[in-house]
Structures are given as structure tokens and as C-alpha cells.
Amino acid sequence: MTKLTLNARSIKDPATAKTQCVVVPVSGDGKLKGIAAQIDKAHGGAIRTALDLGDFSGKRGQTQFLMGSGAAQRVLLVGCASKSKKGFARDDARELATSISKTLPNSRSKDALVLLGDLDINKQDTRWLLTYLARSLVTARYRYTATVSKPKDPSQLSRLVVDPGKSLGTAAANTALTEGKNTGEGVNLARNLANLPGNICTPNYLASEARKLARSSKKLTTRILDEKKMRELGMGSLLSVSAGSDEPARLIVMEYKGGKTKDAPYVLVGKGITFDTGGISLKPGAKMDEMKFDMGGAASVFGTMAAITAMEISLNVVAIVAAAENMPSGGATKPGDVVTSMSGKTIEVLNTDAEGRLVLCDALTYAERYKPAAVVDIATLTGACVVALGSHASGLYANQDALAEQLLAAGVETHDRAWRMPLWEDYQKQIDTPFADMANIGGPGGGSITAACFLARFAEKYDWAHLDIAGSAWDSAPKGATGRPVSLLTQYLLDRIG
Image (tube, rainbow, N blue to C red; front, side):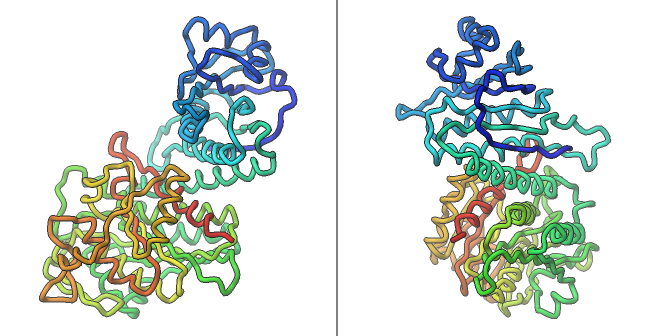
């Protein structure tokens, strides 16, 4: 698929601008003014006719294609009536961007012109709209092709020009478009990795993808730790998960050096279980195929690293991906086995299907060597989080309020939202056991919380947050990865720059 070129510039006479499709926001009051009136006149009153006939009303989110009769071959009307009495708001801007991105890439238009000059919107919200629009357009063009003999036709749209109006200069507008585009491409990378089947996307495959990503920038380096090296480091917890698989585990470390040498890095830790049968504690057969998505946390880390590398942000970031396959075999870890983590703490494995925390805890201990500014781990960790929050929000746990607020704010800004969950000491007793320092499960109550409590015991030496994305990382109908929370993580890192 050809890449999408995005550009912002001021259009002196929108009515005479040549394009295969001109996109015109129309208010819901039935009145045509400014640019919309100019486009209507240039196309023989076609917009006015559509309004009078009731084919189009300007309702928020409504779209309507008209045949062009002027310089534009097509006219795409997009309703932008506001639900707020205070005028055009962020929700309205998001709905506008979403409507454009759902409709335009699926048309036959190869290029398009979006005219935003009629919107009553301030500088800050214009920049936000452009970022969200660019991200949405890029993600709307995603097609899964890797294992399909006759994939869906790719989007024809390859070039988009946006006139942001007078509230934002073209330089700032182009910066916003680029930021949104790079984030969208990071989301698509995460989706593609997670969508790949487990017989292709193995721990070794993820390692090769990390090396490939490192070749894209001199600021990014990759190091792969094999099982021998992990054994030397004492990563008995992580290795207990891969013990039943023919696929060897890998600890993937990517270091992006965009900040000053002495600046402490921000560390992202991703759960990379490339397929999860549950091990000896075997999962039910129904929907087990979706366990290829159990590396969604790792995929989001890859996508975020791709986005920030493309943006060349001025920050030091380290990504650690704990990659393994969880399979049952004669050599697999058994319920009741006790393993020793890299930290020296022992763990009674009461359920081998609670394996994500077993690979993450060693990765969290490994993160200590970087003396990080903060650590965020991302994992499709618990079905309990799906029960608690559904698919709309990722579960957020943190040992520092400031870090939690930063992540929540990034989620709100990008509409890739999280919800903070309790990490109270009261829950810690549920993972106590007489046979080891802790158990890897804490009973039926508060399953997502006790999983976070387990991880918290390995993150006591730095500011730490955990994102449980079991509900947000993929959809079952239609089936496919969402690429979340790449947008949240990318925004969080952008917010940390000077």
C-alpha cells in the first residue's frame, strides 16, 4: 500500500482548487456561509439542493458524497452540528475527524482537499483536530495482507491537503499532521504484529522485527537476550513460561537515545506471549485462537517505539519486551511448582495460565539497571479487567499518583483512555503463600488488582505504572487488533519533553 502524504497549506480560492474530492464541513443550522457557500456556488448549488431535499442535514457525523461540477470531481459533505451549547467542542472535532476518516479512504479518490476554515475553533483545538484526523486517516487505511491470498483492495487515497483556516499557521499545522501520521503508523504496526498468527509471530520473529526497527534510525539500538543469557541473569520466572515450548524465549531490549546522555530514560515493558494455551492449566478451546493477541502489550511497545523514532523526539526511551510462548508439554511448569525470579524472590505457580506476570516480573527487575525516570508495563494480563472495564478503557495501576495522572491525561488527550484502579495494600495478602515468597494468583476476587499487586512487588525501586489492556487490545467482532494503547503511550512520552 502506498503511504499517505499529508500537507497543510492555505488555499486562496477553495472554489477553484483542483482535487478529486473536496471535503466541506457543514453546520446543522441549514445555512451555508463562508467556504461552504463558495463551494456550493462553484458546483451549481448542489449543497443547497441536498439540504433542501433533506438528503443531508448537517447532523454531527453525517456524510454525503456529491458529484462535482467545478474544479473538484467530488464533494464530500460532513455534518458538524455541535451538541454543545458552547460551540464546536473536542467531541465534535473527534466526530468530524472520524467521519472523514471512515468515508474518504474508502472512496476512489486518490487525492483530497479538506477545508476547515468555516469551523469556529481555537488554535489549540485546531492542532488537536489535525493530529487526530491524521492518525484516524492512517489507521483507516490499514489492511491485513500477510496471510490472505486475495486481500481487500487498498485505499486509493495517497495525498491529502488540509486548509486549517486562520486559527493555526501552516508550520504548526504540518507539525500536528506529522505527529498524527507517525502515531497512526505506530498503531498500524502494533495491529499488524498482533494480527499475525502464532506460527509466524514467534519470539524470534519479534526479535527480528526489533532489529529491523533499529535499522531505521541511528538513535535506536537493539539487543536480544537468549535463554542462556537469561538463565545466567537468574530469570527463572520468565523461563518457567517457555519451558513447555519448542520456541525459545527472547528478552528484546530497544534503546532510543534522543535526549541528553545523562538523562534518565523512560522505560516501556511489554508482555510478549506470542501464543497462550494456558500451559498445563489449559484454557478452554473456545476463542483460544484469539490468544495470538496475547502479545498485544509487546505490539504496542513496538508501535510506540516506531512512532517516537519517526518523530525523532528529544527523550531517552528504553523498550523491554519479554517474549515467550506458553505451551503444555512434558517439560512444562506444573501448578504448584516454585520458581525463582531474577530479583531472588520465589514464586509458587498455582496457575500456569497466569503467565504474563511471570515474564513481566523479570523484565521489571531488568529495568532497574537503567535507573529509569519511570517505568510503564503494558500487558493483556487478566480477563478480570475485561469484566471490570469492558473494551472502552485500559486498566491503570500506579505506585505514584503523579505518574498515574500523566498517563490518564495522555489517554484523554488521544481518546485512548485508561481508568485508574486501586492498588491498595489490603489486596496484597491474597497472593501470600506458605510455600514461597508469593503466589502468582490471588483467588477469584479482584483478579486484575491482585495481578497488579504481584507486579508491584518487583517495581519498588522506581516510579511504576501498569496498563492492563486485556479488554482494549483487540476486538472479537469483527476480529482484529486495535493497536491500543500506542496513542496513549506516544502522547505520554511527547508530554515528557522539556
